[in-house]
Image 1: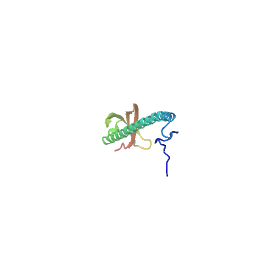
Image 2: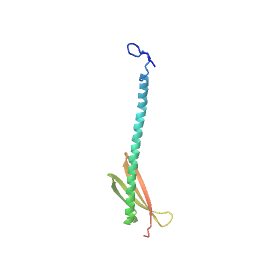
Image 3: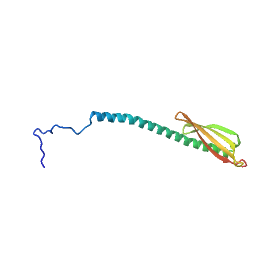
Image 4: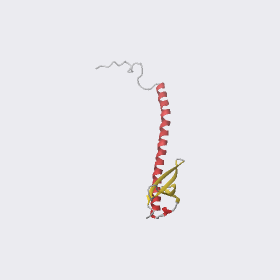
Length: 134
């Protein structure tokens, strides 16, 4: 197969097929200007949700520890207890309340743990039943 190459060694002038036009580049930049801020906001929201989830997990451990301690030391007989606990360097304010259970003579023991995350207050509650005769 033979190709016709001009004597000067250059390709003949004509329409170029490589590269982008100015309109295509501007359209791509405008698309990126819309997509990037939305993606960054999505990452910020996901990061905040992750932090709140992690703090709720820590608050759950605090509530569990406080309830178990109240049951073992029989401090749950008091009407209400409160205090502050620290987990992974974060502060958690807790309260333990005792209430009569509606079904029988058992008592409901509820621990409420409050904490601050993302500049907002959150609370986690955990409850268990205790037998006042024991």
